[in-house]
Every structure is written in structure tokens, then in C-alpha cells.
Length: 308
Image (cartoon, rainbow, N blue to C red):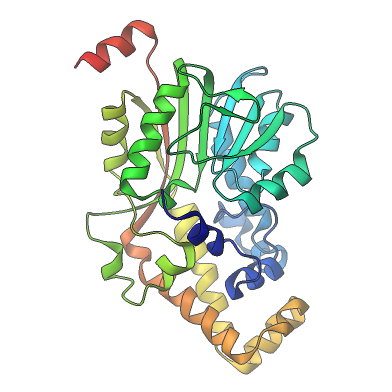
């Protein structure tokens, strides 16, 4: 997995990008958001938080959990999705490689029934976390929302193998991630490293490769949902609107009237944020966003799959 210090700096609330996002209404979630066309105009008023919560709900719904099931929430961040699993009656363990994120998750949700957190690397899990044994076949579900792109190619392969090992026969992994459309390295479209440096990742997994990697780990592919349009394309439209507005003094003044916290930004801060947003848009045509539902076959089928 990527260096934890590098990943932590991508989610540092003191960075210029995250200061802007916080003022725009990002809440405890750090996902992009799921934007429906009728609700798009609301984003100008509410900011992205309601759309981020919608994406989390859609991702969690794919798990098809039942009360009492043991669920690993990999790359849980500040714990929102783990807490939602606990509230649904699951026994949810949220793990993240960043101690600061887990500290926040524990402060916010640690006292809730069925919810616990631990600092752990999802690509190389320890034998035990938060008092829960991470033994073979011990979990019913594994969830990973918009975190695996940090892992690197080998880290993603390891995460799939760890998830397969951890799941009971008949268990399910839901992996939601930003992917690339082709094998072309994202670095060729991000020559200054503004996107990769912002989010601390090296490259993206090609859209079609994830099912192949999952199959090699022993999974069957139950479903693949392409959420590129409601997530990436519509977020890009909002980003273009923001960047265009923030490029002029009059636009910046208007943004500050709507979100007064933005008044703390300097001219350099504004220029930096606009450059980063435009760099994200530049790689938009080369990226996709997908929700993968991978199932671990029942006992007999799992043995046959591993023998092939």
C-alpha cells in the first residue's frame, strides 16, 4: 500500500483544497458524491454533502447485509459508513491506515453498539483488530468505498486476496473505485502531478481489469455498475462551474458571499485551487467510476474455482 504519511496528507483538513471543500459543505465523508440530474441545482445551495451521503447509501446497499453479520469496512476514513452498518444491526469493524482518521471515527462513533475501529492496512491485515480475530472465513461482508485507488496495483491485488481469505463461503465484497478507461498511464494526462499529488496515488486500475483480478483471487463477479455519469461527469460539471467562477475577482466575491469561510483564502490559494480543479477535469475523459460486487462461492464452488 502507499505510504500512510502521503495518504494522510491528501486528507489533511489544513490543505488548501480541503479547506475549500470543507467550506463548501463536505461533511464526514470524503467521496465524490452521486449526483442525480433533478437535484443538480441543489448542489449550488447545499454543497456536495447530500450527494456524498447518497453515494455511501448506494454503495452500502450493494452489500445486501442482514442484522448480526460481521462486516469489514476497509479504508473507512472518519467512520461514517462503518457507523451506518452498525446502525443497520451489523457488527461493523472499520479499518484505516491513517491514525488521525481512526481517532476521529472513534470520537464520533466509537461508543455506538456494533461499531468499532482500528488502525490497520487493508492490504495486509493483522491477526486481530479492535479485539476481533481476522481469521480465514470469519466475515460475511467486506466494503471498500473509494479507497482502493490509493493501494497501488499490487496493493489492490493483495486487498482482493485478503478479502477472499477473510470472507465466509457465500460472502460478498463491494468495491467502489475510480478507474481508468484504458491501460494508458494517468501520469501522461497529469504531467504536473496535480491530481496524483492531491490524492496521493500513483495510477488507476483499468475498469476491465478489476473483475479479472477478482477472478484470480477466487471471486465470481455478481454485478458491475458503471457510475461514471452520475459521479464523475456531473461532479466535473460542478467543478467547471466553480473553477470558472473562482477565476475572476467578481466570481470569488460571489463565492465568498455564499460561503463566507472562503474569505480566508489568499489570491495564491485561489489560483492553486483553480489549477487543481482544472487538472482533474483534464483527466476526466480517461477515467471511469465503478461499483463492483464480487461474491465468494459457496463451499463446493469455492474449492472448484481455486483448483482451476
